[in-house]
Image (cartoon, rainbow, N blue to C red; front, side):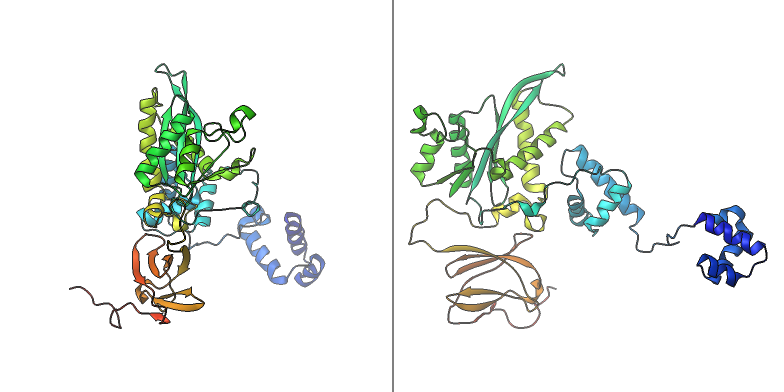
Length: 403
């Protein structure tokens, strides 16, 4: 393009007609006129194409918001917490009441040189994803290593950290550090967790000998660990992943990665197990109650997902109610639908909650409807099978305002 501009200017200056020059070089006469006007004003600079970027960008993100995004990224990174675009968008909305799309945040971080391109990972669609429908329906457990630091700064003794994680909500139910994890410690931590949160319907672990002896040598295979004995006695289903398939326990494996990243970011590394346990307790509070979880609907915290829904229990009997969980959205008329006994029923919630994502917790005819994002109970009722519409019981019209 630079050479063509020079040729056109040379041809015009030699006295050739613009129409002939336009036909020869495949350009318009108006383009030639603009080029010559620019050449008379700027000289050689006219041969360099100008940027096509608009002079103004009225929809550009404000500079203050850009600075805030970079600051949030830096703060989360220093704390060893997730600092991706989705997490930053959550903090902007919940703390600063600013709505910015995750793609915009990603572009801002990329322009600031805060994102390093990584090789393409395995697509999420290739994984078989599963999730327990209720809290306490399944607990995942695993243990990992973390090395203490001596007062001199050198590497100290190795420790092991055991986790009991709720599969449905990702809530950390137990997190403790020990010199070494044994089958006795596994059984003791399970019992302690159950006393605090109730017994689960099932557990999911790998095939470590502290959890199961089903793949042990023939001499030990016929027996049971302390955990297996307790689970069998209480009617709790024990599930173990296939050897060499850690993704089966992917939630607890991913949690341990998040935990270690946070621990390594601490400026004062623990020198004793007591100091390490204090950090684990601090992280449990941060993870359960303050950190938005990208895998939960609406970026809820694990504590919200765990505490606002009914919990499963071991080995239900035929006489107990049939439990199920449904995810829905309130329609524009303020209703949700539920099929019972082959009949579709409409349940009134109120137009105030139109388009609100909700979770329906159903135990036969007893229904609880909660806000999926906040955990607020929107309505509790006993379904009347003889009525297609279940009214709210409130008088028609908008809710009265408080003086």
